[in-house]
Amino acid sequence: MSNNELNEFLKNSHKDLSVEDFEGKQVPCIGFEGQKFDDMLNKVAGKPLSVDTNLNILQDGLGHVFVEMLLTFSHGGINEKILVNANEHLEFFESLAKNTMLAIASVNHPEKIFMIQLPKPEKTYEALEIIKNGLANDHSKSQIENS
Image (cartoon, helix red, strand yellow):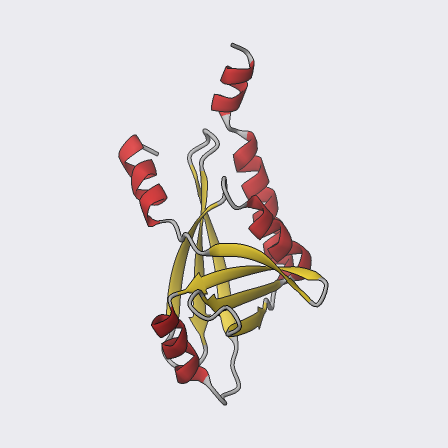
């Protein structure tokens, strides 16, 4: 990954990510601006719904790991692509693998939250292992420690 690509990924990474306590479980949460969140919910309200969740892991072998999360809702024509800097949000993916739940919320109204149960838990475990292995390749840390 070139410096330009790395800078582009850093610039385009989703900033509103957190891990929230939900009934004693740590659940990863993606925040969306109020209007976008409301538009999403209005399209799917009252309908039986499934959300296909794919995690595409992008890494450079030097310890930079990004995850492109693709959320495809079965109704409403909603397709969201969220780029996550795994170097800064490892806990997000650890809680995703542990609880296989994902929350989306309004950053303007945090009480508005929508929970998604991931249908293929084994995929989140596999993704977490790939992320951890990619992060373990961070040669800049070992160079600093050896200086």
